[in-house]
Length: 123
Length: 200
Image (cartoon, rainbow over all chains, first blue to last red):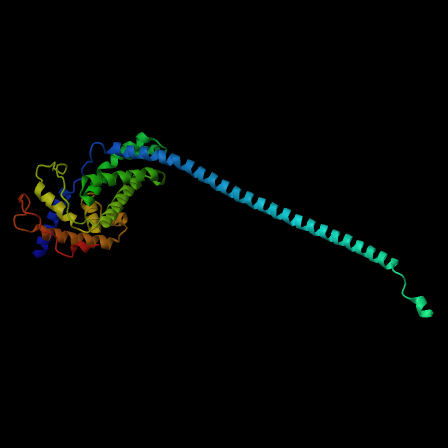
């Protein structure tokens, strides 16, 4: 008996819910609003590839700058190394010349010197 | 939907996917009523419902390429609308009833009771978002529990449990003196029993 009443009550509530939840239409400008939002979004999507292209160029420029800076730094380092080697070569050359001169001077000095007192020792 | 209508919808969907704005406008016109109604019953506010429904169609515009058929489109629209509405309700924590501008809710059938319908909608607003979604899909869209489960990503048992509990609570809340159908009593609706808001 009470189960039947419950079933009837449920049926009644269901019918009332169906009536209360009948679909309704939105305002008259709804479709226009949707289309306007789509239209507003389009330029943004169109701008997107341009922004992406700009970002790509920026990345490329940044990478190119870094490579260029590394090349310049490498060249400067190579030039400095070259200069150092040249300086060393010149120093060795100068030392060799100086050594030769000293050798020559030493020989000349030795040649001008009288021989040790060989006559006195015999007298 | 008749075979002709299905054919037309399929053609419209294909044209809209190809970038035909007019075809997309027609699709929006065809589906605006159910989408807006679902949003309205969930959010209980016309402006927020229109905003949400427009967002759904905007998302549809971006997702056209993924839709395969008219049935898929209807399912997709229902699912996205309900999930967005539930997310918004949970985010805003606005379960409490808000007054509806009932001008648009005016009944178009002679035997309807506007006061009782308003009262029922007020009680619905007190349900937790998921329970409300189940009731709206069942009694507005006339979906069975399996379809509701697919739409809301819920098990059929959970759907049935929500339906049973919500109906019992609504029935109990309506059973107050002077609340009978056709009574049109101006007494405010009795709130749902405490603890019901944690139906999810």
